[in-house]
Image 1 (cartoon, rainbow, N blue to C red):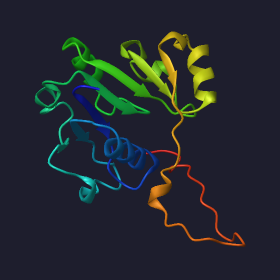
Image 2 (cartoon, rainbow, N blue to C red; image 1 turned 60 degrees about the vertical axis):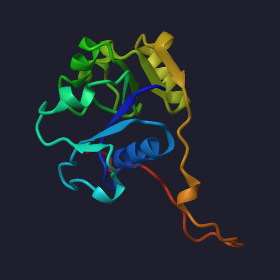
Image 3 (cartoon, one colour; image 1 turned 90 degrees about the vertical axis):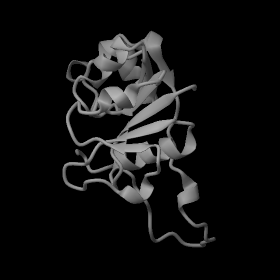
Length: 166
């Protein structure tokens, strides 16, 4: 990855946590942070390479300058962002969540590479005609975020499901 940017939430939601995980673990050069409609922005996760998007397309062109790749999860976030990126020769990498993916609801024709986080998502993308541009990359839980304690009995379980919406 040369100059890649990621766009998404920075808050305690499934999408916000996933975007933050990708930003922390992959060499993104910048993050366009979209304020969550209810939770806003967790600024504690941000660094100097992050820009909070306050206007629908304001400052996006400047943010795109110098990018080779744009990555997002589940949605485009800023209407017209992918089209603007494609006009500048920026490749679009998109990781849909199968339970929310509807090709008619996102400009899927602009996507260069789909990242399928589950085999079910891979199958869905193939059914929608995107098999050639789909790569299966499992998206596991980052266990470094949980302290290990040996237990002989389990009383608490963690189930990640997001909020079921945004």
